[in-house]
Length: 134
Image (cartoon, rainbow, N blue to C red; front, side, top):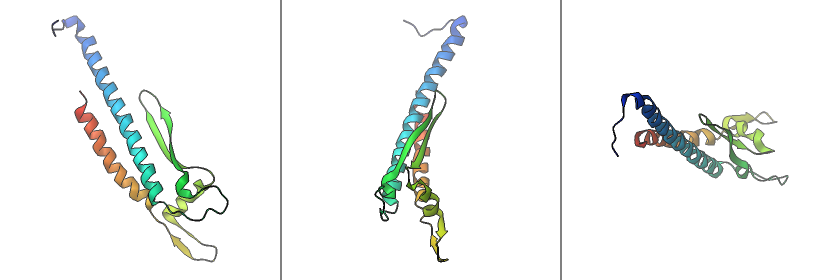
């Protein structure tokens, strides 16, 4: 079998190669997104404050999770979130807040710190996927 292509088959041959390349890139990027989100959830869970569990809902760090919000051929979106009822605390723990008696509790910045680490790893992973897709 030869690797020659007739002129009238050139269009379909190029289209087939581009579709294969596109599928490899999409598969690789989805894999990198899942890996980055898994690392982000793990890192934020480890660095999140524990606090007291007064009402038996679980500690804040135990309620950190991720989910797939969109998965199509051209789009793959995952979300980091905190489960009920402690989802309201994320902004306060990250940015800080005022107390009842007028004091101020400074934010911990654990989400942003972990995001910058995971973002750098994710970028390197995506670059590797694009370079190594054959």
